[in-house]
Image 1: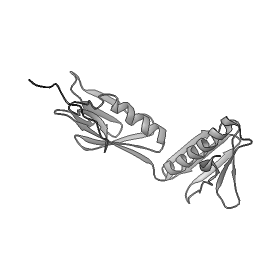
Image 2: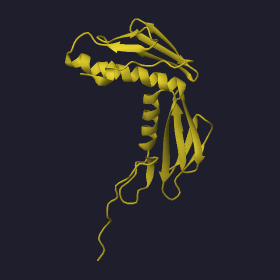
Image 3: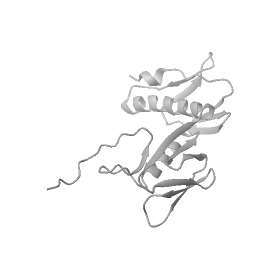
Length: 180
């Protein structure tokens, strides 16, 4: 049984939720997001002004989509009110990041050329120091995907720990060659 799917979704003040068949539109102070709900799942507004997600039966697919749909709609509401942010840091001698505006970053990651990353629609970058930066936006999936693509440029390696990593990420270190 889905415990997450049964929880009602509170709609904070300043957020407008429009239900149109299978389409859910959420508008808030930071922007608007849209979701198309998968087939067996339905969403209704209850008399308390909350959203309730329900499923027609207990088949495996319905149960798995129940909690997923509730979480996706809740993430949309949190995104348009507070937004999402992923912090990353760069470790390595000579490795750095430079802001080329809020929509573009230039990385020096030990390659023979600088690597330039353009932000997708709805994503902004902020650089705090030459080795710390963050990815912000209202779409949780897009923020995570953009941060993962940046990390993929130069993953942290296990011997010296050099590379791009999430803030607070622990990189397991290996011992180097044994000397004679």
